Image (cartoon, rainbow, N blue to C red; front, side, top):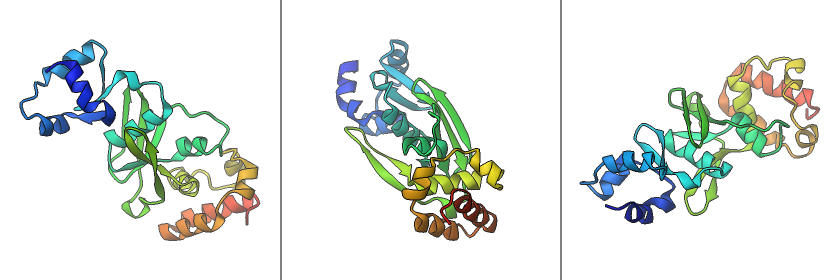
Length: 206
């Protein structure tokens, strides 16, 4: 098989694993992948996962890759908050939430980290369409905040919460307070509910 034949079949998929390829061509020679990586046509993302190197450089593609190479997961925490413009910092790594074990990966498309929440907290995300490669899951802003308070329990004082430097206009005008409180109640974690209420008080949305 030539690289051009392979590219025609798989480029619109964006990233893929060896098992998908073998489902398409059971006799596919895996050494092709090693050779194409060496030539720079493909990038290895993690064990058994690859992507086309010419897709590098797009933040959306990096978020799509994050979603694909480790499941179940969705984009959240500082990455989502930066996406929505709620925190001032530019976030270079892709931070995700998973109900699986924690994991980290580094490849040509970026740095990817996955932090664990209990299965009952794996909710509050929406699909983001990425043409032509499908979609990835992104936390609603209120869920990104909830995930942050859950995974970083040190944000339990007004002083600590102010250090997050959340956009005050957004917190007062755009935050869906009812959604955040509903998510907090759904979590059934009393300490988390306390931190959510303190956050609303700190940013004057109580």
